Length: 114
Length: 111
Image (cartoon, rainbow over all chains, first blue to last red):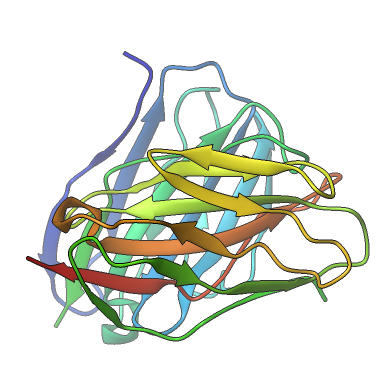
């Protein structure tokens, strides 16, 4: 089954404790992206990757890091989480960036930073 | 810059009512337009899309027509069901640019 998986689905952590949210897709997509969803703000892009070893900032990259060492995986790293990073996070993938390509979304990771 | 504006929610309807969720866009190019749906506790999934002016996207009884003259892509359904309760996102994408999403509209359908 074609899918995007994320882990963990739920995470409660404390300020400053490094964490990684994993994302994996099995569709051989070149493009992957991370979003955060906050009430009233819709989805805001954090980082994206157009292919292996090619990543770039989205609209809200501060406090986040990413890497793309393999085509299927695109982890999101919070090196020193803060309470304002409490949010619902989605990973997405697509055959290419832009155009008429549909994005496929993971189930989401709900992060709470206390 | 490119942007999508959706009608503010939440929207509450009775079962079998007619649904319209307005979406307008601003883009410098000729975008493809999308509606995504997010059911409770799930990720977004594509509901329908249209890739050029006057195209009509349709799926599961939902429809939206790409209107270039009014820069709009309004979502409609003739008779909503309780199972349509979800958050709906309008989005645009074109060329080599990242997809832009609206803020989302929460729909609740009551029996």
